[in-house]
Amino acid sequence: MAHIIGVVSQKGGVGKSTLTRLVAREFAQQGWDVKIADLDVSQGTCVEWGRIRQKNGVAPLIRVESFGRLEPALADAERFDLVVIDGAPHATATTLDIARVCDLVVIPTGLSLDDLRPAVVLAHELVRKGVAADKLVFVLARVGESVASMEDARRFLAQAGYDVAQHELPDRIGYQRAMNAGLAASESAHRTLNEKAEAVAQDIADRLTALVSRREVA
Figure: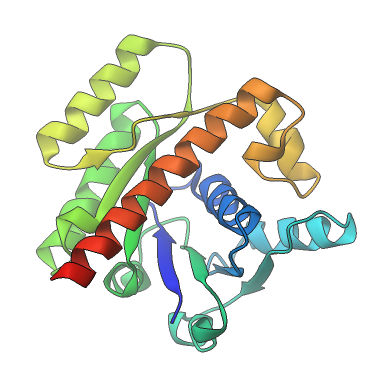
């Protein structure tokens, strides 16, 4: 059975699909067989990205499929090393189902309270309904240059009781251009942007490894 990472959010525009594609690419680059299950059927962002990636012959290969429900998305999970689930752009009943089956749940958020508050509400709801808090990790995405704003966001999330990835994903046109060409954030034309994206992906990979190791010991 594959490891499963879910990327979910309470609102759109916070970098959910960007992180999904980044995580999938970085694991695939390490030789993992990876599938993206795109449950954002209204937009199909990852599916269209996968189509462009395949058309342009970009390696490594990442299978991307669209699903209206979670069950068929995981029906062939045993064929893969990792399934990354791109959830709907707003929290739904399926968001809880995703969180329950995942090894790790990634919640992207911007820096404003308009982004942070609903993200924390989502996390609280998941925990209230039985999802272990240590399965949740927040990622600051689409951030600007203000170090103070990033520190404030980290403090807000820590006070709410949640972990935050060590690195952030900035809001840069280079990432958008990369994704328009079927590339991930770590495959942009700019080395510094790629390094920032790779650092975020490594944070997520480290968290997944730690969680799986703890459960195996238990």
